[in-house]
Length: 337
Image (cartoon, rainbow, N blue to C red; front, side, top):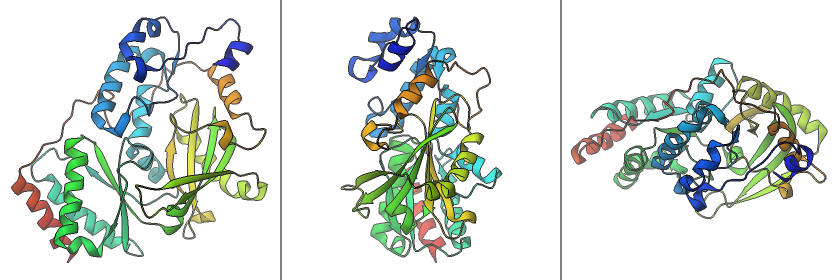
């Protein structure tokens, strides 16, 4: 905001913090804006309860013709499912992913669990551990590790099914993603930052005490090794070229994967909440200034992408009975045999 104010004197910039004051307290100001850039949503989405996402998308839909990124793009990236399907269509190496959708029928979860175990059995090698995480989430919220062998036990079986019920029904997540556990990915990532589809910086992130999600800490080190960046940037750039154009920034997270072409795979993509703090960037870097310059000229797209989920999501899961969830436990135990 300060950079735009100094370099674009004809542009008036207002910084809005709706979580602290309530969206309706700044409603009139928002309606006077020509362009509204959504740069951070973590505060609004405390706890990453999907009911908060529903509220955010419904509220902002009245301003949709002025939003950047568009609500369609936000839904496309936040669901994770849309860009994973994009990776599959364009042969982008990424973490193998099985998607469990919210149950819309009383018997849909039983079939989904059977399909999940069959999918795991077809992976090579068959994973000893798996990772589950919901769509529309962040900061490793609700991410969980599971030992496949232990899911045969009554206690772990029940814990897994209750986890799914809480995410898909109680806090209304549309999807839970299940992936094989990669030791290398659990330890580190390389986060590539793009502004206006141009590469601006890379951070090497290391998860400290990564076995325990409740106490995990992140260490970030700027990457300046040109030889390493020559390895990683082509894949990250290929990803960004496929993504919707109306986001001012993207972050593409890669990890070393010896079985992938080129030795690298994609883990995730972020846009809002992508952590561009200057202290995490290379010394002398000007990422915030580059972003500000780009935002000053970026305008809403008239050709938004088409996400799998509706922007204003009025679809709700069926909360099955205790007996029906017990059948899901049986389906899991039977499939694991």
